[in-house]
Image (cartoon, rainbow, N blue to C red; front, side, top):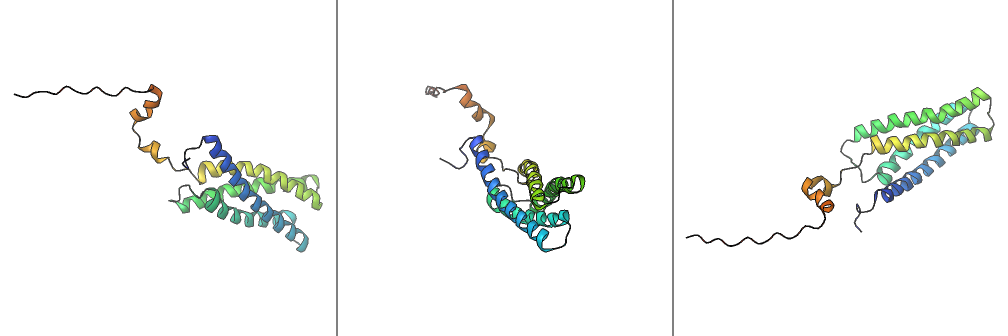
Length: 174
């Protein structure tokens, strides 16, 4: 089976699995850094979590570019990185906004509560990031076979089998 010949659902499932694998690594980094900062420094919880999220964003970019989306367009790296950072910043605001609301809005500030709301924030931000990264940052290249085909060639499967053209009679020139 050729690399591009699987169906769209199989490609999406593979993409989601790779995105998830990179996400798991980023989440582990995020939790490790935030919990270390929460327990070993006097930084406020949300500030420490912002630092942890930024470190995880750096890890995730490397994973997404060189693992999940390695087959995607690489021609405009500056634009790609700018969009990645912009959408990651929105994800950072979502994740840390939920943690901020839990701590400062409801007073839920124990270590367990911080981690529970961190999970919730990461989950919601991940949905946004998946959509934005695949739609705007790591755009798929057009499939070469389809891009080069003429419209008549694309219509042939819908028209059914075509009979072979009849041979032309030979013409005699006098």
